[in-house]
Length: 167
Image 1 (cartoon, rainbow, N blue to C red):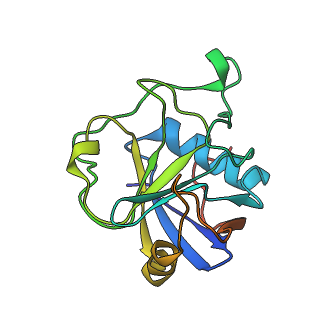
Image 2: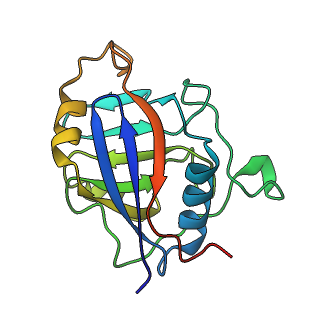
């Protein structure tokens, strides 16, 4: 079991994630590479729905942007990695956001509670192992009519703790 973790440093606190690299290597390689390169630095979480999830990872801040590290794939998107044992079964599950099958780029979301309707549609690649209090603070940030936080929740930078996939 490859244990790999990183911390998302946000304007409301830190979130430490454990990644499931052995089960979803493509999603993890993409996320780790983007995080380590600074791609996510100073990006905002553009969508926040209480009781559902918070979404970020788009450098344009619109929810329409972002590319994976796989530039040889169409539009910089990559295929889904749906693993039966990885479910949206609790608070703090981290998955790739998409706009339909096999359209994973850089955007990701974290669940505020179990979301069984998402199973089989989104690639789960990590879970929050420390910082659920930060997730609590994120969930409480007021939003506008488009589910955008009224106060920016910024992902300032990421710290990679262990990267067994690095060559």
